[in-house]
Image (cartoon, rainbow over all chains, first blue to last red; front, side, top):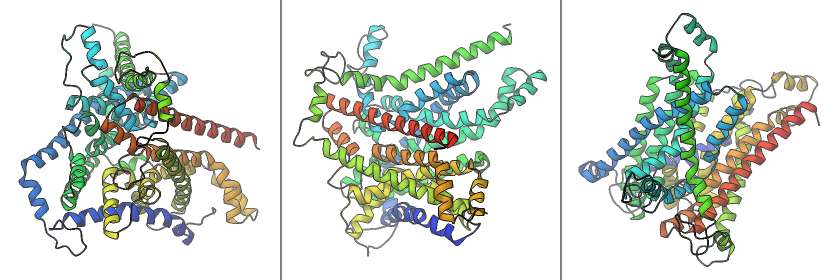
Length: 288
Length: 275
């Protein structure tokens, strides 16, 4: 017995507000985007005829298709970088740092920026990247270059630099969690059986942390695919990903076509998550 | 051949260097922004600083006609508080419902978690489309509020599930055996025990909403929230006022986190020693 009996009807009453909210403010808007994307006229009315003309238009224009491939390319690049960097950081924190106070200190210093505004963090990158920015000043002082490099601001390099600093933590967090769950006895047993350190890592540690890697990669994937603010702020309207295209088309009043981009973005994201989940069963992690 | 101890130490040093390097990489822009916000009145948005002053902070407080940050700040704070309270209440109710294992709880779980997965820009875009077809004017306290909850609720929900996981059911059962009615048992026994979780859920509601930009983009209408105004100002011209504002909101976020952590510690200590 608990305050709420198993399968009691009151459980439905308690779940209902949250469920209705998610349906009304999340599922419904999503369905709406799908519907509007099928409208074949640009006028905004409920009785519009439906068809796939907008989708055909998207794939007929190489410029739009390029935005799609650029988005996927940028996402894959970020996934590779954050996977390696995130794993190194997670391994150091969970395995190499032994004193709990030091561990906590590292953890706090890593997580605190996460609690601050992403927009502010993006703006904070600007004085770093410009022609008179910090990176260029340092490079010139070290005599690595003698002319300031213009390629940082308004470029993919700049966007990537900023995104790596935002999203590496998402890749590292779940790995820390899975590394901590490995019983020390497993590693000790392997060492007792005279396994080489690298073999222990490759055959025991890495497979056991795979779920953490995948969860982290899903988070990075979802965030980079939908990231438009970094590209807009640091790319300075010169570079566009799918998110930026939605805003651009919305601003110019092409709502059905903006919806097409939104649907394609969502489809790409669902496909990506499905592929990543093939690697590992998320439910076995015992999140709930 | 190097022996394995030396190699082990080498690995530790390399990984440590990577971690510290990343920390510097993550923190330097924030610290640079904070430093540059104290530049003098003639200072620009990059180094070198021209003197040290509070000029740009005073500039923030001055009443301006177009770039007045105070009304948006007020709206963002009210919205964040609204989201904080709503997230806490809905998350406790939803997690309580999950404990009763009602039919369809699996679908319910994924429905709520969908809020984390769904890209903010698109949820906001969909909501924007709906307001157009229904013919309502979007506003920060209606449409923006609705889509912010979609983002904050899953975090609060997971926090509450974790809190109920650690919860000792027998205490609740004892109360019921002693003929407390379910509401009394919940109010006097359950709620105080999971209070740290509730504070956590409320904190997620506050900070996630306060900083939210993507979801507000299509849903806010003419009275804008702080992140939208910051973005608009940034898009027009980058000024040290934005650094001052960024530094201020960062400090506010940190204070909120610190206050919540202190509150949790206080609640835990009282739970151990009794009131």
